[in-house]
Image (cartoon, rainbow, N blue to C red):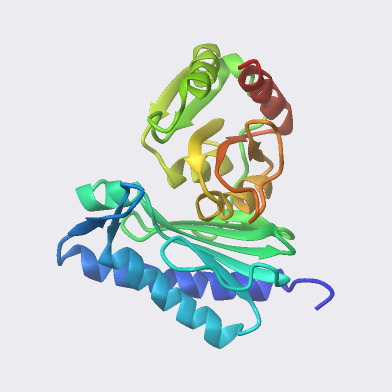
Length: 261
């Protein structure tokens, strides 16, 4: 395929999100027991069930595509097309009944994310964006807030705990230069950057299944998203601190503050 058919892939990604949402909504009524993984993070049976179901759907529809997921071994990361799945981004929020979790679904072409979905089955909010596909929230095209200065910017951070001492100092410097900060938004915060409610969102300790879906959504709403060094995010970027901003100009100001540490 010389050029990805982004609209066809977007329709398939939304069907995957419909499937994951149905599983999660059904499971919520039955409780949220969990296990603890080797890295001390929690995982539920629902995480595994959602990812397994989506992997099966992808294997049927696109058997020549690779898959990168949080809960199971990766397949075919050297293939042109790779799907990236985080079945429940924000498992701690899911377990405790706080509705800021979501399913993240992305498609990468030659390593670069070209399509992303953030889906929250509880709040019934869905952001989708892709290269050649302007970002939409629940079907309506959205844009980042333009013209915000750093001093006027509203900042979001999911959780400061993963920051090491240097990263925390960089975050605190940025936080002190912005208008105010909200915490705990998780993947929602990046959706809110894309629709202009937030100006900046940043987090530490993220992996490709955490950020690949966010990248096309923010980028195709007019924003910028990189690691804290300003490097582009791909399926091979590994463990990163990530930051998204509502405009390239604001992003450069943000990176300047972060790079000082």
